[in-house]
Every structure is written in structure tokens, then in C-alpha cells.
Image (cartoon, rainbow, N blue to C red):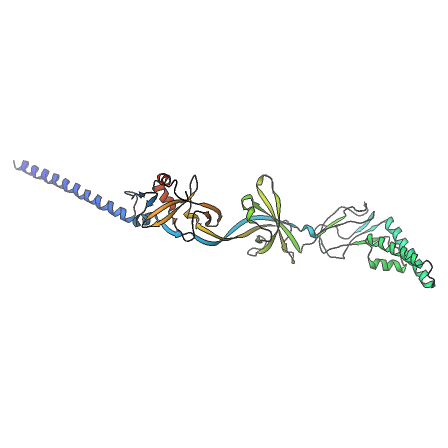
Amino acid sequence: MKVSKNILIFLSAFILGGIVTVLFFKNMNIFTGRKQISAGNTTSAKPKMKMAKGAIMVSTVQRQLYGIKVGKAKLMNLTREIKTIGEVTYSVPLEKTVTLKYGGYVKKLFINKPGMSVYEGEPLFTVYSPELVNSEKDFVLAYKNYIKLKKSGFNFGENEAKSFLNSSVFRLKQFGITNSQLNLLKTGRLILTDTTVYSPITGVFLKKSIFSGSYFNAGQPLYKLTGLNRVWMNIWVYEKDIPFVKIGETVRVGFNAYPGKIFYGRVSFIYPYLAGKKRVDEVRLVFNNPNGEIKPDMYGNAEIMIKSEKVIAVPTSAVLITGAKPLVFVYKGKGYFMPKYVVIGTRYGNYYQVISGLKDGERIVVSGTFLMSSDSNLSQTTSSMTGMPGM
């Protein structure tokens, strides 16, 4: 009997303890649920945004929960940076092809290795030309005849002799004979059977189409030279960026050969066609290169800084790219936000140009836009906006 009484007391205490435990944890769940909401823990209970007519009501607690920040659309001068690569080449206006106005034979080459430096007036090669030799003999004869008539004191035939002399001088100069060579011919010491051809520019030797002993025709390209005090660089610009590149723009270029050093070129030409299937356009830069640091066939990294006029701009984080049109949330005050379609233009770094839809100083959501749109019934909100001004 005593044992049964003890068992009854134990069972009563066990049942009473269970009831107390259930009530305790139930109260704790209510308490912790409230704490989780206030602490920003969305795993248990996330507050829903309230819908107003054509707008969304977001409380201060919800704005903190979502990290929603309000900023302004601003009138700004924006800078767009276009990064690309390019290759250095020779400046075509500085290239010089050496030709002669008479035919003949090559006797000796002084400059014959591509890449060799040449200076203006430096000998390139010597030639023998029967046509040139005959013209030299005509000159010597005309010169002697003119001098003889001039010393005779008679005017008879002097003018004709002078005219013939001038014609022979003109012919030799057309052949490339210099004044110093003419003076040698006047002395009568020798006929220049071997004529030296000199470099017309200071630069480098690119290539030749003759060799010692070969025959050449009048007008045939013999040597190709170029100067390096100015070089070109062709860079590749994507089709979408072409409208922003203007002739005269300054371009920053860096080369691997000179780490940390910046060279400044200028846009001199924009090709009127795209480069095949690459959908890029070639843009030509020109560099002054007095020290010859920039060498043809070098690759460089180019940066073009495009500055806009003053435009209305918003951070890219403020714009929600929907299936229809770009969307922003305009803050109307007292916790109300109105979704609004805008027309955006060019992206400049972290900003979009706003063509229409916003005014300077208008308050908008600049952070948390995506979270607002995903948690609110955006489709219903935008439907209710149909027919409203600006929609």
C-alpha cells in the first residue's frame, strides 16, 4: 500500500513537470520569435511590405532589414573609360620609296640589312646607267661650249648655248644629280660613270628589291625607308563604343617594355568600316617619338577617357533591369516608394545616364532595389500604375 502511494506521487509530479515544461517553451518561442524579427533574422519570420495604391509602404524596420538606402538623382559630369589594345606600326607619311628616273645596273650596296639606321645624305648604293652617262657628256659639252662663247666677247650664239646648258642641267637634276656632282662635272676631271644614290631621310632601312649587279628600270622601287620620330598605332574599339571616340581625343597607352610609364597619343583617324566578323573598328593613334622608344610591332594597352556633358545620373545599383523597361523606386516620403520606369542611356562606370523619367534631386532607392522588387508584389504594383503619368 505504501509502494502504491509512492508510485502515485511520482506519476503526479512527472505529469505536472511536463505541463510546466510545455508552457515554458511555448512562451520562449513567442519571445524568441519577436527577438528574431527585431534583430533582423529573416529565417523565422520576415515582415512583408504593405501595398498602397500604386506604391509600396516600407517601414523603418523593414528598410534596416533589407539594407534599403535612399539617395538622389544628380546632375553630373561623368567619365567613361574605354580599355582596349593595339599594335604600333610605321607612320605612312614618313615612309619613302627610293626610285630613279633612269634605268641601269647596281654596282655597290652600302645599306643592305633591314633595320639599319640611315641618315639624310648617307650613301645607299651606286649605279651605272648608260643613259645617265650620255646625259653627263651632253652637259659637259654644253658647259664648255657656253664658257667658250662667253669668253669670246661675241654675243652670237651665246643665248642658244646657255639655253642648251640649262636644259642639260635640268635633265641631270631630274635624274637626281646634286649640285656638288654638277660642279665635279664642270671641272672636266671625270665623267661620273658610277653614280651614288643618297638617303632622302633620317630613319631606318626597311627593305630593298635590288642586289649588286642587278638591272633596274626607270621608276622601279629600289629601297624602302621610313622615319621613326613619329609612329602610328592601330587600336580596336568595339562597335558599341565607336560613337564615343572622337578625332583629336587624347589616349593613354602603356607598353610592357616600359612598366609604369605612360605615353600619350592622339586619335587621328577612325576607319569607316568594321574589321570583319570581329565587330570592332580600327582607330588610328599618332605618337611623337623623338627618342625612338616606341617601336613598330609593339603591343600596348590603351585607355580612352570619354567625358560627357552634364547629365542626370543615378548609381547602377538604383536601376532594376526588368523584362520591359529599366525601373527605379522613387521615395515619396513617410515610408512610401513608387516604382517608376525610366529611360537610361550610356553607362559611365558605376553610373547610368538617365535620359528621361527622373529630375535632378529626385529621391530614389540606391541600395536594396532588387530585394524590394523580389519581396513586394511588383507585377501587381506596376499594373496599378498603368495609365499614370510617365508610365
